[in-house]
Image (cartoon, rainbow, N blue to C red; front, top):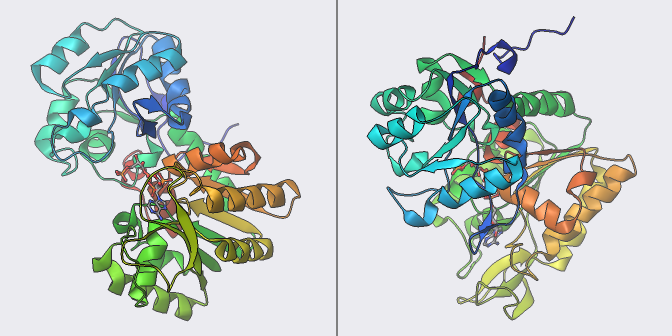
Length: 399
Ligand SMILES: Nc1ncnc2c1ncn2[C@@H]1O[C@H](COP(=O)(O)OP(=O)(O)O)[C@@H](O)[C@H]1O
Ligand SMILES: O=C(OP(=O)(O)O)[C@H](O)COP(=O)(O)O
């Protein structure tokens, strides 16, 4: 007999003829209005199909970016078509998230129909997990399904609050992510090397304090690395950097020393004065960055030392690219390290797990995502899970 899951899943849900509010993560990378990586869309199709096939009315809730109030550039309207083309059936779009317009759109649904509501974060009560906003969302559904593992670290109205207002279940993507991560990483073979890079420095930096106690080697890249370099007194010029987090960065280095975790920072960078593809750039040591320059990628000496460390590891967990990989040649370090990790995985020498909207896009860009042991849709949520933290969106679904 199959062991009962710790979470309520779609197996437990009665969705026929019901209005099913499905929280999904559609925070996909977009360039010039085009989705550049559809991993997160593909990941939620099974849940949408299953509910629609069982005669449920599917009402998708999602956020896009980090809007401050209503922001037409961060509307989910174009994403409805992107979901529809992959689902193979129409997906309606409602330009409101709650209220009479949303209620009318939901009331018009037939069993099997799919509707996407506007960006939940257009209302600031979403991120505050405001009970009134939760109640307004809850009037739109009979059942709640959370399939947004990549947003499960946020205790927002649509990711956590709703689970207490309606009968709540994990969707198939959520369920598979939890099961796959547990299987791959519950007892990882050591040494474990973590790569943390990317641009979301303020929301990911603090968790490194706990991560250093769980991994043997921490390789820091991207904007995150610039913040550590600034903390060490280096002039990072115009690089992406959170100068007000430098003391937190120093604390993390201290914690790593106590925990015996080897922290690896870049020693050189590709430096440019313009943030654009093919911007003129030079290889520069990290203590030789000019005031008008930005470190947009790790340099060749850094890549060599990172790959050397990777060869000593048995497990790698990775969130956040080393550089602005969307703009060649600032994809060089990310592509080189990704290929090295894939080769070591193929050779049976490494278990490789990576996650995050942009990280997955970077691995696809490098052509190696399928060669990783496991690729998660989640970045920040994956890191918090790794840190051993309870994820509010997951906890709310526990039996
Ligand atoms: N040195 C850098 N300077 C500017 N942007 C960077 C740098 N390194 C990485 N990035 C940006 O980080 C973004 C990805 O970061 P993040 O959102 O944290 O990753 P993920 O979505 O995988 O969790 C990419 O858009 C990339 O361009
Ligand atoms: O893209 C996301 O996370 P990620 O960049 O850590 O992979 C999720 O949609 C969460 O977005 P948020 O970090 O704005 O809450």
